[in-house]
Image: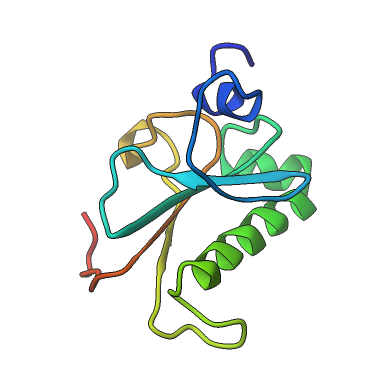
Length: 119
């Protein structure tokens, strides 16, 4: 989709601070971080939400989650076999949830204590 911000990042039209990449996923630092570590993980193919992606390609959704965990490990928020010190994954779906870019993306947040409830 030529008007999708994240599709344009995948295409190399818009620069991003890429921290992790696979054949089907891309992870880059958020330009407006809400925590010391704030990375967005996206599928390279355009899918507006997690629900739409799981219907189209459930394996790709699993790959996005695996990439998010790999980012957490790389950033020191977890280990390969444990969640310490911890991180949060957020997927906003729809305008009422705060989704502003309609291309599925997981926020990997960490590096500080994250309160609950989040909003």
